[in-house]
Image 1 (cartoon, helix red, strand yellow):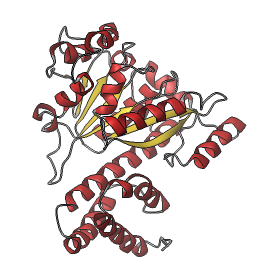
Image 2: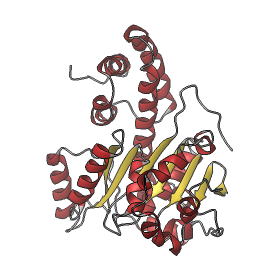
Image 3: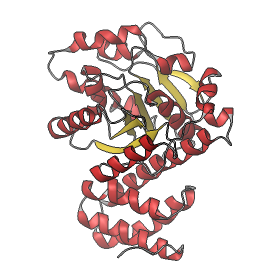
Image 4: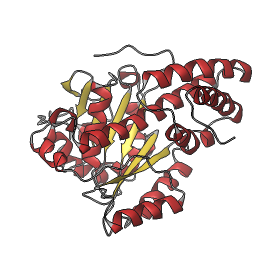
Length: 337
């Protein structure tokens, strides 16, 4: 497969979750994965954890008898992913995945089955990202997906009843974080089907902003290209790269990539002294920012403050932030000291 590993490569597991259907989980999964694989040239493993298998159907993937999502839990062993294209593989699903909850319920360490499999070298030595598309229900499957995750992304439609169930999702993730996986982070709430002229959209954004929950800077606007691209079994970039759908998904994907790269950087820097960290931080930050196409503005500041500071040692944070401020001033962005 594609690119070589960096010196501080760490495979990241991203779980995309909401307990309400029709919010854009699968659409977000597809287009995030396609961007990372095609534009960033990173190696991505998709996991379809939903018995409805919308992700599997999108890629028109045949489901092998054992090498599928159900097989992970039935055999307690790795399965062979199906190749979609360069840098992009999938572990497909079918209706048998609905039997996972009853299959493993009550078993010792049943909530760590997916974690143990994904963090074996059979996957960590191959993939840069694993992206899990979850079903809209809380059961053993979803708990396994969150326990295995580094990040959780929560798509939320900006409709009239959009916030219904969001509190339940947050509560479930918080419980899992406290009891099973302290490193899992809510990467952000992703507003979808956004319309700037709709009161419901504005109300949701205001509500989320007031709640203090992490939220992506981008908004995924309603766009007919999403539906047409899915009917054609294409990503929005392949279907119409100039559409609002492609522009919004690009902005979303860049936020995810930047957060992951900075997280890897901080983890890597944590091995050294503070002085060494500052020097290394400035150099690595410049490289990271120049490699990406995200403008170094308040967006970067927001990503750092929301997602990274509280999860790492203070001296490492200060080293990275010092490097960021140095770069920011060079690019004309005035930091709030």
